[in-house]
Image (cartoon, rainbow, N blue to C red; front, side, top):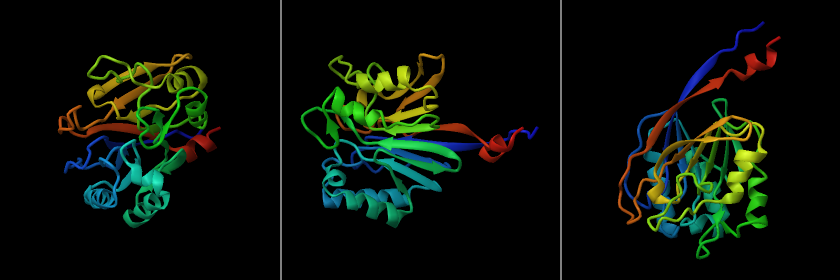
Length: 234
């Protein structure tokens, strides 16, 4: 039998910093969960590109958020920034980085018709049904219902359909769930699934609900099984 080995990847995660000049810590991988800008104008997207280049991580994976209008109106801009910065932009899509399987989506439930918003129910569920099994990390902009999603008014603003997919439908759910959107929900928790598995959920919002910097990027270490050893194990 081939012995299975692992390697550890250090991740830094940030979301909802809205043009604030934050610095993220050294890590192997940076994950950005959207709302880097306020309105996603040309100048704001150029600011984000410069910010992304300055961050110290070897790998950088990012999605858009509801404030980042420019990426929905002009999808080619995201791809251009991706190419110029050597980063990875995800939009209902999958990437593999250092052996980690990462899926990203900018979609959130409809609220005053911002960018990448879909009606609750069948329309938004179509996006969540695309989430594959056996992910290491899922990066989305908004939270599932009841998971670090309480607003300053005491409402749970997360998506019920997303919660259902993650907790009840997937046999092998993502190990980590990274999001932002609800600034007041910053923090970490553990989600339990229907078959007893756990998802480590992180609301990585940097700004508070007044759009002032209130938090720093969160870091965590994730072990990545050697996929070749796993495939050749007898």
